[in-house]
Image (cartoon, rainbow, N blue to C red; front, side, top):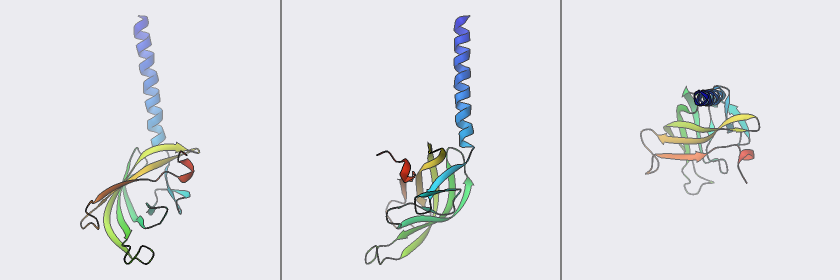
Length: 141
């Protein structure tokens, strides 16, 4: 009898913990933006290369947002660095992005990772990639 109660309580505690995590994902989940120092909810533009600004995605249209992952399509913009990155021109490509790795930082939930895929023609041999986009203030030293 005691064994059943222990298992029942353990199952209840586990269920409550999972419910809490699920509820957390249905709150506002932000993305680091505004020059990679601020944050935005469901942003239409995300800078992927914060240090240089040479790679970003814009015109995001979300299929899902706020859960463990967010999925959107938009335009991937990449500096062609021709003749060098300072003088290069941005080229625009159709793409899909996936935001994931929800983590808490300074009282907010953030997507810590972005993955992308070029749709149609790709400027590189590898048409996919992944980058950490956690807020700078939240990165471990």
